[in-house]
Image (cartoon, rainbow, N blue to C red; front, side, top):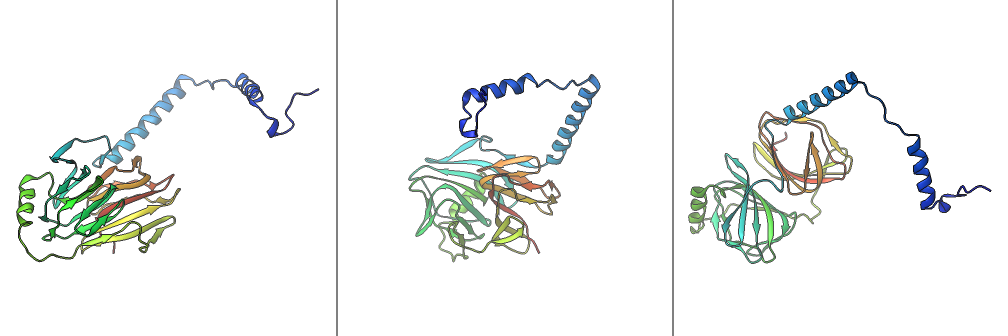
Length: 278
């Protein structure tokens, strides 16, 4: 009488053990001679060298990288990149912490990565974007619940510029209009390639800021950068060439650099600031 299970429903742990034994008994390592081993090793090292060469000049900042510095009680900052028109940083607020009013030296853009921020009557939550033009006065910023945000175009990290912003915040000059884009609003998304959608944020004659959303499996061909391009990953995971970025991680691609194919296995949402598309 056969002990073979009649269906998959009858397949139990003992059957799996027996199947594993039979499979392992007939598995054997594939013999590799010294020349084949050397060829495999050389091929792998060439691939590694090519990958390193392609990533040369790109600045990638992981969540664990960099040093946090205390700005004031309850607020700390981590430098990502020192740019010609303001720096890029992560800023973390403890619950109840606040920054005073100030006047911006450059266009400042921010996205809430976690928690929430309040500016007068404006409530910003996770994924919300806010841009304030150069010369405009910013109301005090506070966080009732605590927050982590990405800022670019900020004076943080350069003390003379910070002092100038604080002094400018005391002057009651007219404000240029700011821009807020809420993550939960049904703003238009434009499909740029299959499975990749773009939402425009801020732009001028040279620069453009936008948010991209990639579906799982979506791909974008490799490309070069006319101007420096900043990328902050908001959700999911994305490969920029051979570099995997996860939520909260940052990459700068300098002007003239190349990006390999951009793709995502699980889907991703990320902020990009670079050359304007025409």
